[in-house]
Image 1 (cartoon, rainbow, N blue to C red):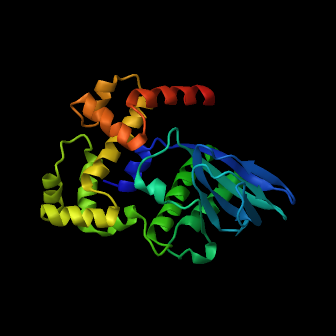
Image 2 (spheres, helix red, strand yellow):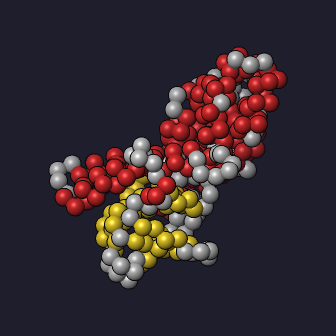
Image 3 (cartoon, rainbow, N blue to C red):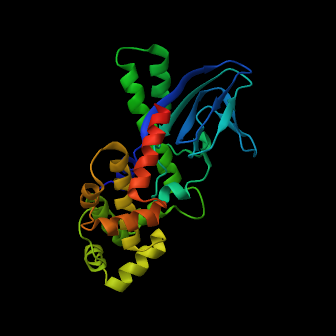
Length: 285
């Protein structure tokens, strides 16, 4: 089970390309990011990112990439001609997985810090080629390359850059925690107990509970609750299945227990969440 792929899918990410083209000298463009996060990859020239909430401007040169998180409104400014690929991922509702809480508002991956084994620069070259030549199938190729670039950016952030590693990266490096998380992601609806997860991890109950919390920052069953609620959020937004049916789908046989768990994580009851999601969808539509 690929943990990163699964949590991105469960969060309901919807890709949309914002822009792929040239900036004229002196040109600026605004990017509202109220319900999305994404990245800018500079293909040619230089660009300056100006956060709307204030803070120091961020200068990006060719090959640099900047990831921005949900709610980070900003503007791109070009003093000289430049080409930038900008992509966003719409999050229809605020995700509850720890990864999304831990990501910084901005993270820049400079070209100079990208190792020769990183595919990001190769992807940038391919994007530049597709953008210039617009051959048959270019639109599909660009969509696929954006997905690949996004994964590379997240990998760089997860693998490395700060003194405090993100919990998903730390879990990936701990064989015991990773095994348990992979089983939870593969079958969140399963009736997992702490003992069963400890057995999967190959540790005693107490050793597993302590190890998991030290790595992830919450208990194994607390993490499982978030996975189930995240899946339920998607079902409540995108289907007409009853709350009872959704509760059963995500691993709760008792709808009252499900509602309590859901409200503990989101602050809303499942019905309140569904009503808000319908209002938001109508507003976007």
